[in-house]
Image (cartoon, rainbow, N blue to C red; front, side, top):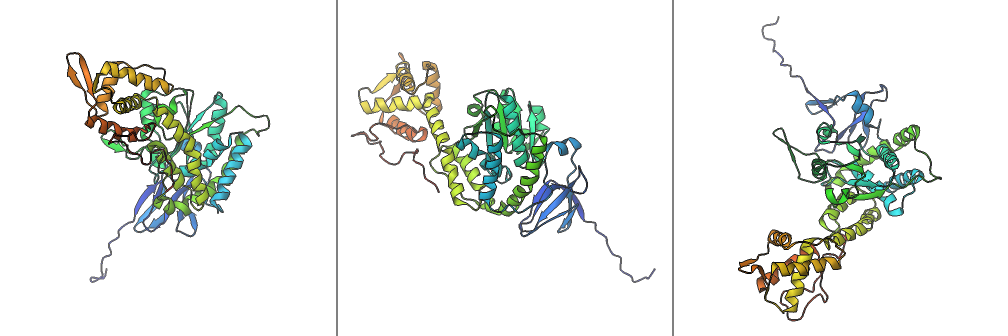
Length: 441
C-alpha cells in the first residue's frame, strides 16, 4: 500500500422505483411494457425530442427503475410498449371517433364526448378536475362493453366491478389510473369518495395522512340519479342496445385497438404535457361544475383551436340542464318569491308560513312537485344568510331595503331573472349582463 495514496470515497447513486416522473427541464419518465419480456415493465425517457426505452435511467444523482407491480395489476392495466408519432390532434380525435362509431351507434354529441374524455385521461395529475364520464342505458352488458373499449384508449385504464370503499383505498393510485367502474348501486360513502376523486384540493384523511385521490373515471350504475348526487360537472353518455350493423367487440379487437392507439396517445401526452400544464382555456358563463369540466377538457386539446372551442358547444346543453335544475331548488324559490314581493311593494313583512306559500308557488311554476314546509324554508332562509324576526305570531320576514339588496345579490348567484329585467323605482335592480351569457376566454 502506498502511504500517500488518497482514499476514494465511494457514494452509490440513489436507486428509486418510479411510476413516472416529470422533471423541471421538461424530461418525462413513463412506465411502458417491456417488449422483450412479457409481463415486465420498462421505462421510457422523453427528452423533448425523442423517446428512449430501457430498464433504468440515470437522471442527476438518481437512478430510476420501474415500480414493482403484482401480476394482477399488470394484467388489469394496459401499458404501451413505446411512443409512436400521433400526427395531429385532429387525426387522433377522429380516429377515436371512428373506432367508437364502429362498435356503438351513439348520437353525435355523445360520440364526440368520448375523445375529449380520452385525451383528458392522459393528463390526470396536471388537470385541476380530471373528468368523469357517466354511462347510462338499459343494458349493463352494453355498458360493460363500452367500458372495455375505453380501456383500450385511456391512460392506465382498469375496469373495476362493484367498487366499495375498502377496494377504493386499495387501488394503486400512484399509477394515476383511469377507473372504469361498473357498479350496481352507490353507497353514501362511495358517492363521497367519487366526488373527492374528481375535485381539486379535496384531500381525504386516511391513517394520519391527507391523500389526493384525483383520477379520471367512467362510471356505469343502474341508479339514474348518479350524476345529480355525485357532481354537476360530468360528461354523460348512453350505451344503446347493440345495432345489428355494429361490429362485435371481442378480446382480439380490443388488443388490436390498444396496440395501435395507446402508443400514439402516449406520444401525444409527452409532446403536449407542458402546453396542457400552461393552458389558460376557460369557458366563462358556465355554472361552476360545468365550467371546471370545460377547463379540463379544453386544456387537454392542444394544437386545434376549433376542437378546443368545441368543448363549449359540447357542454352548452348540459349547462342549460344544470340551470333548469336550479329553478326547482328551494333557494331559487326563496329568491324568486322575495323579488316578486319586493317589487310589488304591497307588504312590508309577512310570516314565514305565508312566505312559504309564495315559495312553493314559484317552484311549482318551474315544474317542482314537492312542497316544502315552513320549517324547511325557514332553515334554508337562514343558511342563505337572510334573516327573520321572531314575534308572537311566529317568525316574520321583513321586506326592508337591506333585504332587497340581499335578494338582488342572491339573484345573481342563483341565476334568477325577472321580467322586466329592471323594475322602475327599484334602486337595487341591475339591467346588466346575467350569468347565463356564455363567452369563450
